[in-house]
Image (cartoon, rainbow, N blue to C red; front, side):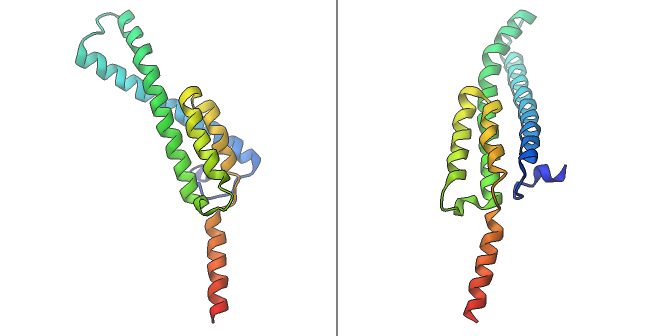
Length: 144
């Protein structure tokens, strides 16, 4: 369970699938709760939800938009977390950056179901932080 929150480790294909489903469920819960909270606040402060039917209609209109915005913010946060934890911004081929941007772009029209696929793939990348430490150690030992 602790390794699900450690973005710096290199995951196997099976672990990447587990990562996908775990963060999909978390994203769905966050999206649903944020949508529900915004709709409730809207109904309370505007007083436009006099009947359950009106509340349902307003919930569909506002909740869907809030869900997509929260999904985009969620995917963006996960992508940045992975890039920074693994130091992938130092990578020469920039594949991780491209996949992260693709995830963020997918989050808007299709949601987390498809946007998490590239992020799950990024979890299988090597942690460049270890490589950088080894290179710096080797460089320093050559200086002596």
